[in-house]
Length: 460
Image (cartoon, one colour):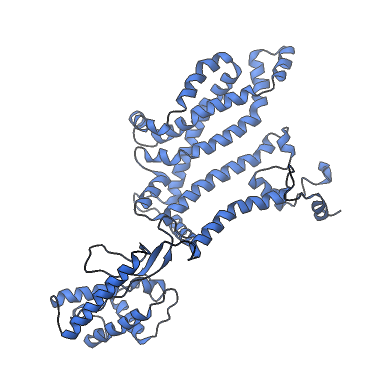
């Protein structure tokens, strides 16, 4: 029979009680486990009537009655946005009234500077629609854009200017062109120009950027090169990996032997475990100042914090795993005349090694949770410094890619180690089953089970 027919006959029902799903079903559900949160994020971000409590400005203007300045890209609450628009419209009404009465408030040079700012406010629309690149945006080129907009010769693709703003552009250009058809800052109108009315689109708050914003900004950040003393994100990433893995390595080098001894000899268990059990309840960040005083302000206190945050749990977990070893194995070894050293080397260590591997894999995930706190002590560094800086300026579209990177790094590392277990310890019951990690199941599915379901394995 073909492998597809065999798979169809042996596939498990999706909702069977206390029955395992087959490898393809587990792979599909594992994929959906990640796709569902992303789908919810997409729906919340791109469906305006679901949430969108803010308005993201595509075009802004300066108000005369307040000192707060909003620029394109800023987010305003839906409650405040209409009052902002009305304030600009009120300013324009005053400008038109003063123009009709021939009243000019201020010197000619001051008015020309204000008019230059009005002319420049269209820049976000210009770059968003691709009329000019950021490098091409100059006062002379913006002046030409005003002319083309007034003549209606530009196609508005991504940002559509409102009918109100188009009328303002035509009235302003009439004043601008009277003075000069080409840009000259000294020939700008000496009569105040009307301000462009703010425009925006429904938006999530700044702390929840939409998926495409996160992707675009993440690509920009990760492709940016190092600039002077400011390292690139890949350099920061390598630095953060070093903190996590060195801290965990030192914890494992000290904690595993101590845990095995405590789990083997009750003398050492009663000598060490009570204090370790007490100490593990102390929050590791509380020792950050002490660690900086002892190890100074470079990477050493950060590695030490990961060590402190992982070591005490590691000892207790390893000791408990050692105690779970089947006592009959030790009794058999003693019957055969094995001494204490031989029992540890030939019975205990080989016997606990598969479970010890699992413990260390899980505890490595624990070590990842200390990374952000560790990199904040002393001199901020690594990925955490980048997130802290960007978060302070509310650039959360730069923060999300780094958070995702940390999660992906820990998850992929765990899945790789989980998939390696059946090759490192082929004698364990788990290795003979088809319950592998996500990456192992993915490889298993790609191979179409040719290895596991071959006649040589006796599984057809």
